[in-house]
Image (cartoon, rainbow, N blue to C red; front, side, top):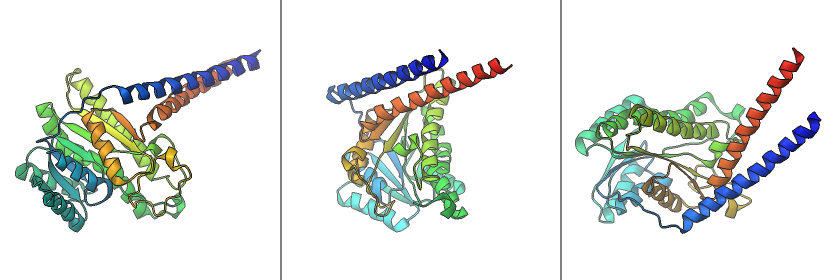
Length: 306
C-alpha cells in the first residue's frame, strides 16, 4: 500500500510540474503581447562595472544613448577610456571613466567618493563585472578561485555599501546585477563560476527583502537580476553549444539591450532568452517540493523505527 501511495505521489508531482511549467509559459507569452511600460533613464546617473569590454561596454553605450549620465568602471584603464571615447564620438558627452578594481574594497570606496564629488549620487548601479576560468575545480589555482569569487560576488557587497546609502536616504534608485542561468544549477567546469552567480541571485533577493522589511513596505528602490544563458563575450574561449536556438547564444549588444529593457520594466528577475525563466522557476519549485517530501518521508520512517 505504501509503494502505491508513493507512486501516486510522484505521478501527481510530475503532473503538477507540467501544469506549473505550462502556466509560467502562458504567463510569459501573455506578457509578451501585453503593452509594457518602460521608465525613462534620461538624466539618471548610471554606474556600470566592467565597462571596458563585452556586455559592460554595450550597457554603457546603451544607457548613454537613452540620455543617462554614464560612469564607466573597469580595472583596465585603457579599454575603459576607449568605451568613454566611443560614447563621446556619438555626441553623448555625459560620460565619465574611472579605473577601479571592484574586488578591492578600499579602492571601491575611494573611487566611489570621487564619483560622488565629481558626478553626483549614482541612481542606477549595474553590477556587471565578472571573470571565469573554464576548468575543473582541482585544476584551479588558489589565486584563480579567490579572484573569481572576489570579482563576481564579493565586489557586489562593496558597491552596495558604497552606493546604497544615498539611494536609501532619497528612497530612490535601482540596482541591477548580471547573474547567469547557471545560477539555477551546477555545470561541469562551473564549480566556482556557477556558485558565484547563484550567490548573486540570492544576495539580490535578500537585500530587496531587507529594504522592504525595514521600510515597512515603503522602499521604492528597485532590484533587477538578469540571468543570461550564452553570450559571446570571449569570457569562455570557443564555447561549444549544441542547441543555439534553445540556449540563446547572442552578442553582448543584444544582451545589454535586454538587460536595460528588464531594468526599465522594473523586472525583479529576467533570463536571456526570456523563455528560460518560467521553466527554471518551475524546476526550482519542484526541487523544493521534492526536498520537503523527502524530509517528511525520512522523518516518518524515523518515527516508525522508534
